[in-house]
Amino acid sequence: MLDGWQQVAQEALKIPGILVEVYGDLAKPGVKQVGVALETVIGLGNTILWPIAWANARSRIALEKNLEKYRKEMEAVPEEKVVGVAPEIGVPVTEKLAYVSDEQLANLYIKLLATASNQDTLSNAHPSFVNVINNMSPDEAVLLKNFVTNDTMPFVTAQAQWPNGVYSTISGSIVSQRVLSSLSFPLNIDVYLSNLAGLGLVEIRDDKWLSDDNLYEPLRNLHKAELEALVASKYEGRRLDFGKGGVTCTPFGYKFIAACHVRED
Image (cartoon, rainbow, N blue to C red; front, side, top):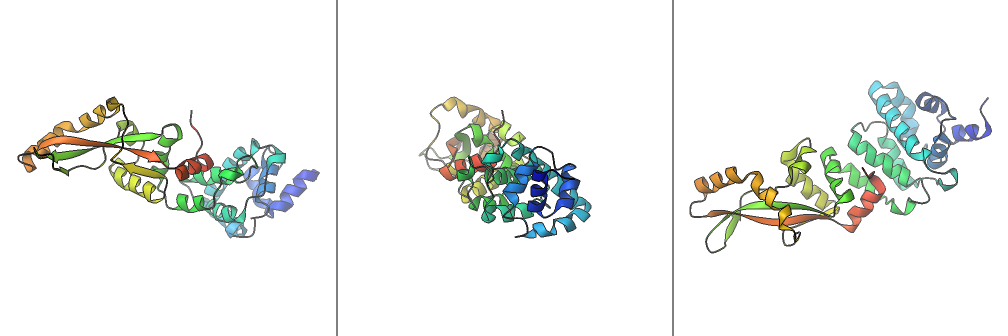
């Protein structure tokens, strides 16, 4: 026989078979909070198809892993602080849990769901954040982590410059090796930054930069030899120079980070 609150959680979720499979025991910490938070969204979207997804090996792995992560997030939320997730956020996010397998994107969805489940953090959860995640690549999710602890990402661009100061830009954004090493496809850095800017999360400024020029000098030296050779071979009469700037997080971006990103120590 189930205890009283376990019966409530089981009924609220409408899918007790899957809960037993995922959590093993409905008495696990966090399961009651999950039940209360998802009560209003279960059955409104594709969560009614979770039992079918459970029958597919790949979907089962994704669903089990994502629901377990969500339970762990909710475990830390006092029961009196748990709120029902608004359908505008809960329905599209819970639909994703059955098939999103990339860890970076899954973590964003799960953290957003947990943020929307907690009375203390609810104000950070905006419905538009679901579409923001939908339009992000895993590398962009990683790139955005830089703004969890930093206000600005410095960059330089290589220029082939005439003696009169007129120049042609001959490179994309050159950022630190630390940033690039965290990406699966570092050559896409300009595409990633452009998309993050298009989503309203960052601004790319080549008219403002950090006052400490020491932050830019290593960037100028990263590909200096290759760039000097390029200018000498293709831009006769010009010299290599560099522009500098910074990528800054917008207020909307900071709100997104507060709702969807876990601070990493």
